[in-house]
Amino acid sequence: MEKNKTAKYFKYAIGEIVLVVIGILIALQVSNWNTQRNDKKWLTSVLSDIKIDLQKDTIGFSNIIKKIPNLIDNARLSLNRTEFDSVSANFLLGEFPDTYYPYSIQNQAFQKILDARVTNFFELDSIYKKINVYYTIGLNGYNEIKGWDKNGTLEDGKFFASMGIEDAFTSLKNIRLVQSEAIRKKIFIEQINSPQLRNILRENIYRKKRFKNTVTNMKLAATRILKNIDEILEE
View 1: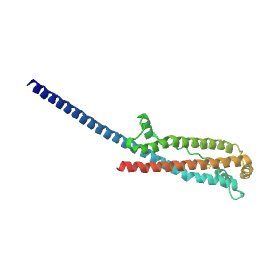
View 2 (view 1 turned 180 degrees about the horizontal axis):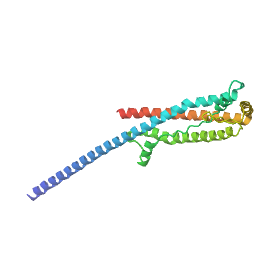
View 3 (view 1 turned 90 degrees about the horizontal axis):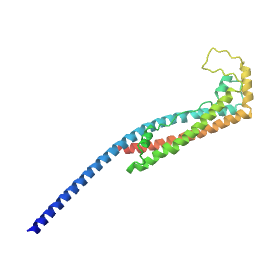
């Protein structure tokens, strides 16, 4: 009889242990489901924010890509011009490529990822790698060539201002010019035929072309990532 009681109690204890284990496993599974649901909610939010940043980038890149060819063409016109009688000194000065583009890549959403110390997107790790490359290697390369063009353009502007030609600044009206139109043109012709100015314009064209190529590649990368994000968010 004692043996039967012991066996009965043992079976009861085993049953209790099994129930406890099952309860723990169920609780862990529910916790895991909640964690996955929260992770997915966070990931969806971050991807939506990154999408907004990338959309801003593509607009900024498009504006740059649209405007740079005009600067390059004007610089080429200045270098190749042989006839000056039919154009004014103001027009000739206006052909100089004295503009740079300070657009900054929008990375606020990516900064959230860095702040959260996230290093992957779990089953979406491939999109994480693309985003990471865009905001590290891509952004650094863009900033480097943007800074190069900005600094070079500012230096070019200093040289343009030192050529000795009085600039009318078309936005400033009713201000008397001391130099005559003939003198301003004469100085311009002398300068545009000098090796120093011609080399400055050639380098400016080269920088602008390099910058345009970089911006074009960044826009292409942003567009591809946007497509991937849209596919994920639509699932």
